[in-house]
Image (cartoon, rainbow, N blue to C red):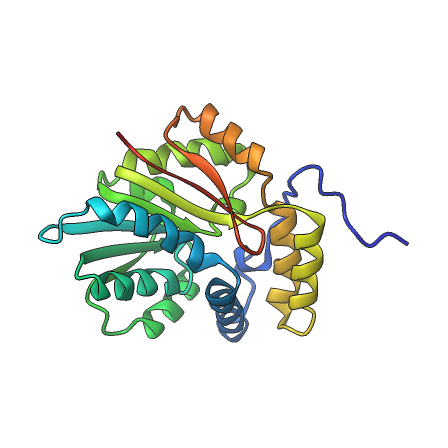
Length: 237
């Protein structure tokens, strides 16, 4: 019997975290799992590598502003702020998410962090407010988008970004699916269901490249990271 689902095309089934039916305890458990994967399985490493490169040109006398789309537990914004402080950069981050329950948990986890603001909003509504940020970021955000919304969302993010964009996501492949399935086998219900589905909803490198081309964002490049991570990133010239 073949237990490997078809991976030739992106799945479009909704994840439990996007369903609005999960309890706060389930969400808390799932956010813990996501934070752990960012720590140990490449999520933070992918972002840090680009920030290390870009920050060589930053002026330490100026504030660097960032928008984190689909911020979840806001663990990556906290990591970025701590990373920036060690290098004496003054970074301010706004994190947005469409799930109010997730944001409540994120506020509890980030209480007292004055350089981080959290806002309940979807990307389109937030973009309509007219704000601009030096950089727009997103970790595991792109694969939550339905296929038809990927290119329009990239264009919205480009309109919000003054200097550049950085997205970290998963690579869709059999090894990643098997690995995530094994990692989540003993996890909570949400992680056990959403983890393998996230791989099925994720991307091939050429799919992200085509999306950037269709969006007209020629400055974005796809890079492979550790543990089946992909990044789509670039700075404007």
